[in-house]
Image (cartoon, rainbow, N blue to C red; front, side, top):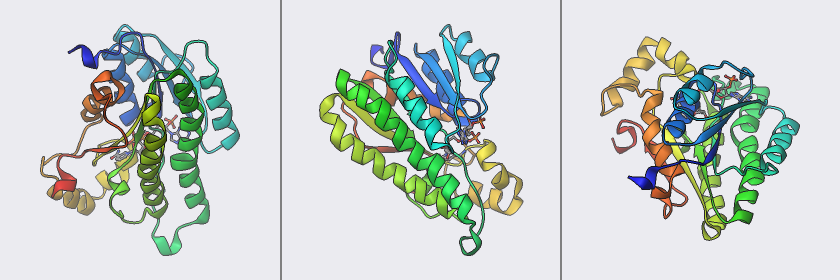
Length: 253
Ligand SMILES: NC(=O)c1ccc[n+]([C@@H]2O[C@H](COP(=O)([O-])OP(=O)(O)OC[C@H]3O[C@@H](n4cnc5c(N)ncnc54)[C@H](OP(=O)(O)O)[C@@H]3O)[C@@H](O)[C@H]2O)c1
């Protein structure tokens, strides 16, 4: 299936150090793309994701950037947009979560989550996407969430940010689809990563979540691989502005 081939493409994956981003980077490399990985604490060399990408025979470059710092995000966006080798695929996946009941939710937690999960996502998509629009092609993929559709429990900032990501996906797609740039999002279900460790460790929440998943298991980061390659490849050239759930059937229930 040549339509899924990414040979020669350059993909930037944020939040690539671990969890879902690491699996996405590996999937893109296995489909043929070279990868630039970005995260707050990514090792300059020798990271797990670097090993995955190079094992697939592709090149890897690490960039460390803290999305809580708007100036760092702006600098990253400029740097990526001005490269001689253009970015073909941007995966906006980095994200954080803060859990506290809404009535007591600290303003600092709200501000941090909105900055990292939404404002930084727009700033990077804007900078790299503008270069894609000028070139007339490119793929932008956001990591949304089930909380792009639902309210969640004790994560009001996270839910607001992920609803924002779904809206931003559609807003950018409306403007850029006619310029050859695809903007879409993937909404992972409950995936066993550090992000959901508190839920996995809570026997009552964990059992309640599992009971509601038609596929009868938590997701693994690797479950996002197929959707990532699809939305990064020519196979999705006529797909614009969707938020694709990969959730074991959760939303259909
Ligand atoms: N797990 C789930 O069930 C689930 C469900 C729906 C959506 N998501 C979304 O999927 C994405 C990845 O989550 P995950 O489950 O893979 O979580 P994770 O294992 O906690 O990984 C989070 C990634 O984001 C990076 N990151 C966090 N804060 C950052 C910051 N301030 N600046 C730059 N990078 C930062 C981390 O970098 P460092 O390692 O360098 O700190 C790491 O690479 C997030 O957007 C999350 O909201 C997850």
